[in-house]
Length: 415
Image (cartoon, rainbow, N blue to C red; front, side):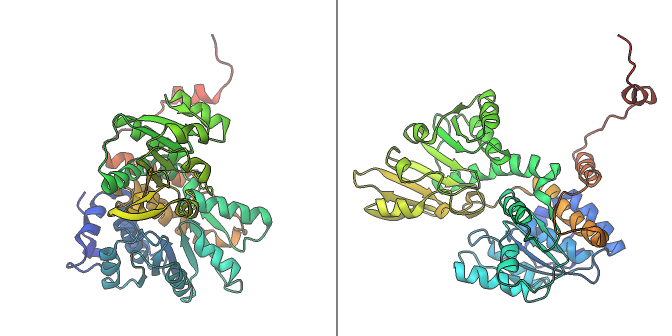
């Protein structure tokens, strides 16, 4: 489907990569077309803290098309695509982001978007939400949206403690988000980041995937597809059995540390691989993180254990152990698919960001009935996104006959 982003505000000389992504986001395009006519976001200010990529740019343009006033900052210091940020500024969307920004600048930018007094907050990792609750508790927010698993975990903890101040839609929990973005997007883009940084051959290597949620499932599946021998570490017995039945070996972290060649974390937890594991790892081991925060690999311990460190290639740093073993870290232990590659393909972000746009509209429409809780996008909206995506992929959906509907609604079936 052709898509002229100049129609919604981006100057023709703007970033062609944004246009390329837009062509592969037909669901978001359909929502944009409706938003232009209906203006459901008119009069509302939106502050977004998200990865500044071509796909995010298209979401921002959709929100603007719907009548919103939008400001954006980066949700990760290494995920910003500087040319995209520049193009958004050119399109009239204030964007506070530069690749490689310091932690101090990162939080300065979050406060800058909050200084605009937004009605809605789009978050990816819950950093903006945390700042609002810790440092800006008097600031009134109508509601928010959360993009990623790690952020939803934080939000549910806040709700459980009774400190959440406004309703937030857990977009990550929509089926059209986590079943595709997390599995297929993370699976492909994480390996893409490792390949760009190292140019290794996955075939024949032992790849250890920590965590077998949707993201870990996708990573393990793609690694296996490239010919790797996949090992999974898990704390959940059900997921561990699922990994085994997918053909992967399941081990403890200690066992995997001695066996693996490439380690990829996707747990949302802290220090998944740490000093006790580094001591057992082979020479040439590669460590990468696919979780939102850069805490899954204990880089402080690795640095303290090493006798020297140096950057070998873009996004690949070598740590030399006292016995001469070399351990390599991709993208500073930050989100590897964005730190060392371009993030998820637009084809899956199409559904995720369609969910985001619809979540904003839904929250505005239902604001008077919502409490300070974590909500899931209604199932019918989730299914609408899936139908639009299926249609764009030239797929056909079966329809029940009246006889079949009657059969499924009854219980007195004969044998």
